[in-house]
Each structure stands twice: as C-alpha cells, then as structure tokens.
Length: 75
Image (cartoon, rainbow, N blue to C red):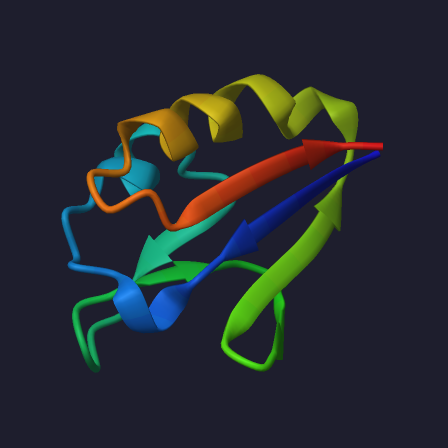
C-alpha cells in the first residue's frame, strides 16, 4: 500500500504532477492548483491510499515538484 500526501495550499500550479502521473492528478480550473484525485483533506494535508502500481510515477511527480509539497510513503 502507498500513501500520497499533498499540501495543496502551497501549490504554485506548475503542472508537473499532472504531466507525470495523470491517473492521480488534475489541475483545478477554479484556482489553478493541482488536485490529488480521491484524496481527503485533514488540516491542509490531502491524502489518499493507492496500490503499489502507482508508486513509481507518483514518486517521480513528488521529485519534480519545485516546492516539495508532495510526499509518497510506502507501507
């Protein structure tokens, strides 16, 4: 199991996460920030549990993020 965590409030809308891991990320037309699909908000941290097959692309998305607001944790 993998958990992806996103601090959406700090997003600058660079779009890298969407380009790298389109299955899990979209850009909001409302405010131009990225949206972690399926995630739940808990005190400004959006998180979702996903299967192992999404690990690699989301690790690349986290690494590409210029403001380091994406974390990917393996369980």
